[in-house]
Length: 144
Image 1 (cartoon, rainbow, N blue to C red):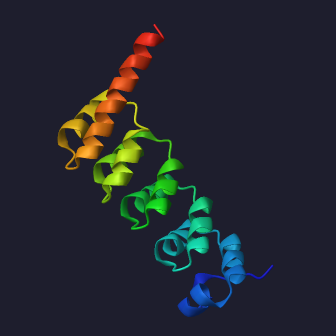
Image 2: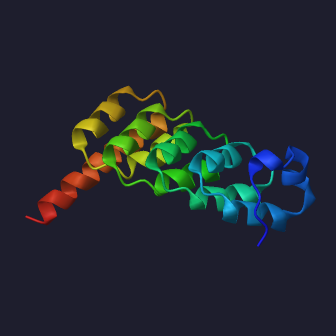
């Protein structure tokens, strides 16, 4: 297998040359900071998808979820995170209301959900928080 790094590849080669070369480069990159750079900036969608799937660092995934302009990648990154504190940060600070709303569906702390329901600037995020609070309440009384 060909060993490549971003440093020895020109941007044009990386994006336009051969998709397989790009995918092999992703296979050989171990440093998640390099993966973050590819996931955020690469023009080739297949390479970005494969890159996001390889990242496991919750802080890097959080950065992608909060800042990516591509909803699919932001949501893929958010779905790989299990830490409630990081999910809360995404739900409160993502630039995109859709990602905030999707993240609210994974939060279980009703105090945080109440805060989001009262303060998020977008109505759909506030509505998702209220629905999630109701769901968690109903779930709690049905298990007692």
